[in-house]
Length: 81
Image (cartoon, rainbow, N blue to C red; front, side):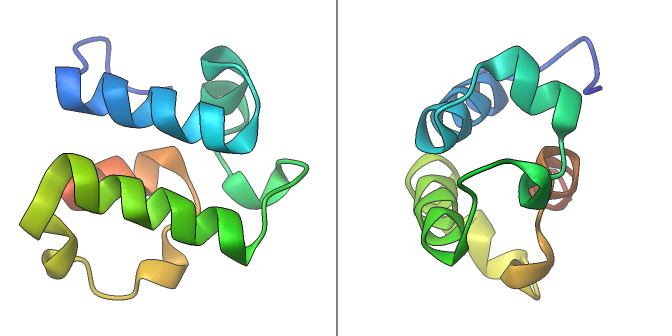
């Protein structure tokens, strides 16, 4: 599970991912691995990447291989570098 102190932008991002995948925030955080969530596919991944860009802006450029970001923890870890 994510740290107890979650930044506001992270809360917004997690909320957006849960809406994209049509699951609750708690379920998303419990499963964490996006590839294990029913309905997750490459188009959903692109929607998530779009949300990263909207919320975090230029930070997305710092992420190397976006296709490997398949968990909430991995995404937030990369964004916090």
